[in-house]
Length: 227
Length: 84
Image (tube, rainbow over all chains, first blue to last red; front, side):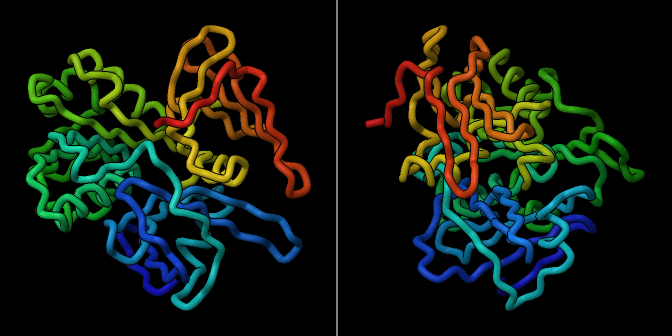
């Protein structure tokens, strides 16, 4: 691990130096494996937060009862080593030739692989339109907030909103998707990442709007799934 | 327990099959539904990993790691095909 960026009070990005790293595709993840002194091992998948061509980086949210995330968000220091397997995944990935327009929907730290896609789109000078719908609990929980200001991002804050907040202030549902998602006639390609309930709500809502199921890519995570 | 999806076990599948498997098409032996493994429902909370068909909830795959060996039961699948 070579560098740390604090994203929110509970979320950090770790930049990694991995010997022999073959490069990755936007949307892929790595498995991080920690081994305790007694031999006990815990392994969790974490999405790559960086774009292809950039150093591999992972963004981790601390789970209070987690086995891996407390170490990665509190204890690990630049220069420390841990075991990483990857890059992994061929389904929840985007390459510029896949086109769009891209409709990205993130619940909480589900924004991580979508940030890699947005960065890759920008770095590759892709002309594919991309919009991100990003659901967070509060303003302080928004990961990559400053960076995302440069993109077409629609925020919704589900738990608390600062005074003067002009964005959405409710959970994502079909009505909200109808206002925000690209129209079906544009042939959009959707990527949805977040907790299981968020992903299922958004995917079902997009299908209600007429999105083609095979053009909706989903990735779910939970407390046991890491990230 | 909440279901995740096949993306979460991409690394384990890679280790078992020796290649990227989340795009492999799984055909359910019970109902015939076909889906990439990435879209199948995955339960991680038990002693092993259980993969279920999203259409009929049949168990299509079970992976259990015992002493560094992964035991795989594919009897719920009628086919597992890599895309062209």
